[in-house]
Image (cartoon, rainbow, N blue to C red; front, side):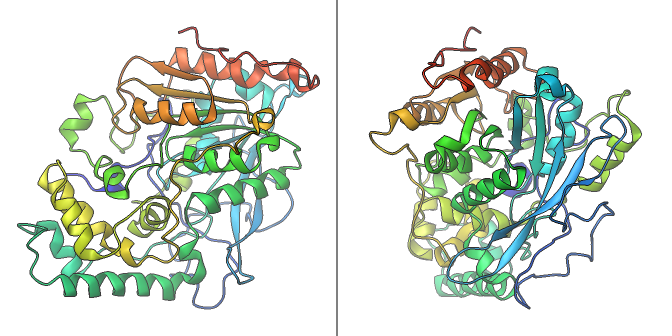
Length: 451
């Protein structure tokens, strides 16, 4: 049996050193006293240079000697003036004379390490992307080296939901509600206003801060799995800042939270049958430099904390208004009992989570703004159980974007060795070069779809 925190998210690329599902350790954050949770240095792996500086500092790896790191200050959001720091890395283009710009990567989860993704990209992403783009990765807020959020596991009446005989007939709903409130209050005491601002809207705001830190007028994007939600928000807010974007394994946020979360749970047998890799260590290619191998050891996330999933999912999706309604909705779901009980145990705090109440719904470009839309390409496996093709189709229709569906069940295509998807992504991200200087040039909406 799997939990959402073990199963949800994008596995590392096919040749990546380790599969990861969440958060590395340190934090470089400027929250008020009591707003940082556990000491970020208690479990921090060594990593140099310290990403708290505002300037790019060399952080080379064997085979990636020009790699650079820095921190980016972002507002927590809301009425206060609190800020936190995002850890950012950049691997300059290998062929400076043919450089197109910055390609910002973001893995899914939520909770995968963007720093680790960028290191992986330097090893096994298509060569044309590594040659012509600065490869940029960062840990999103609440994860890894960008102020990791962790409030522990459900306890007491919440934990007992995982083995309840019937969710509809839970005797002491008041005790469950009190336990959910206590869990949320403990998180609030530890992390303050950040707790209400972990969703994809905040993620889109952070991405704009990353663009500014890069000093780029426009950026290119390659976003995977759950990161495509923040990507949808970003391209609706800042279409003029997106040169070209590829969304790989597309999540449609226009659905109830219970519906989405129930389908992120899978048994080992289901994952084996659907060809979805387990989130465990992979064989390390023999030609990987020792320093790169060491970087993956240092950046390898621990088990993804429940609080991060709650902070993202409770905010992004629609949820019932009280615990009793949540239990009834889950009890009526046409899913295996272990799934409904696991979601009840983990997600009952959503009814009290700060910042909920404004779900994303169907993210779409502003009406009548067709001339100012970002240049998107969506790719998805036809039978992906993590991000079903039907959801990708709905997102493609909203954004009037081409969708490449690839036969098979694999979750994650670009950077996973799928030649068809990688060829389409490279063509889409590099074909805009000629049009960049010509405002009248029309991109081919079917570019890269000949698989």
